[in-house]
Length: 67
Image (cartoon, rainbow, N blue to C red; front, side):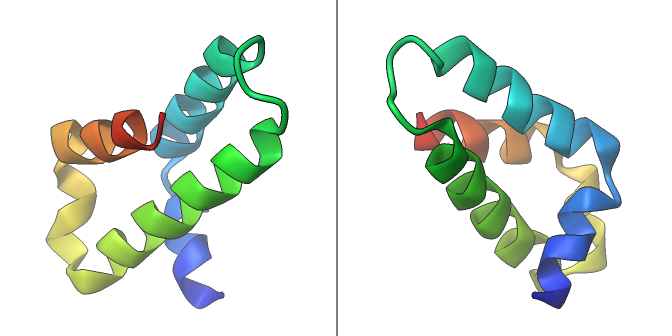
């Protein structure tokens, strides 16, 4: 649960997830599930190393893969 804080501390990550979720709202039935999965996976990645939050391209790619 503490790892989730790492995602919410970085506003651009949350905005990216919500942007993708809004874009998919006509294609998927439950956007909350998509958002939760993205947040959980990005949180695990950020917990590995402090420098990982600087890897914007990789994080955006992770979010895109969940689509």
